Image (cartoon, rainbow, N blue to C red):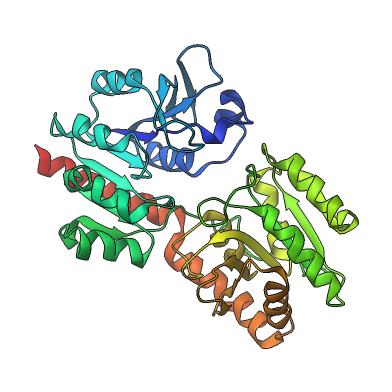
Length: 383
């Protein structure tokens, strides 16, 4: 079977070249492609990049990474999701795949990508990987394209309700599915917790933005200050790089917490299990509805290593089974975090049940087989 994955935005390459991304950086879209190639399929992953002078094809891990220079941006003055490439669409016609899998169906190019794919009756799978401030409005704008999809993969209950109840898309086309997977042979508890209170952020560091729609580690600095003001001596480990790193370092100095923050830069994916395992808690600094196995790779990896997660939710903060939802107000957030880590029974339950939760729901090999079966059914139905 010939499968094409579409990752038609370029924000990931704002600080990383395409060769670096292709050969040295972990990304969920690459893992989807690699896993299905391992199952014997002919796979291509399309990405966009403003940093290349001409289109490129890179063969890596049994599949082809096809990078296209963005043709234009629309709407203007938006940092994410507004890149377009008609050359990518023309290449899609030449590839003539049996199945197309589109990552993040709220990108601004989705309204024409979906009918472009379906005009040849090619099965289309669209997967939700993130939102924006006008998600509900976009859903109605995009409803003609969403209705063209043969399968919509969603990790959130709210997105499932939006698709099936408000847009009235048939329930058999909407499937709860993790946003990414975890290789639990690598991600499992490794070693003991550090003796000092240690918080971890692992991921890309974007320029400062609202926590609601993009990860915003900048919010962690005032929370660290509030924890220190409450009498604790915490350490924050930042494992990642990106265009927002200088602002994060300046914020640490402004709040006078620079001696309590370790900036590790980019950390190889295989070295992350020890960081997760030894941390007291992992920060996932954007809004989440609940702390569970379906949403966000860092959240899943942390739980796989037995470490609870803190994420933002101003509407309903509080302790949950596998983590704590915190407000963005630093003092209130620090109090909730302090209460959680001072609860040894709760910490022990996460250490015990977190890895089991991830093994049962997010194992990469299981997800790949589920996709393989779903693609085969869709391709068979389209004949």
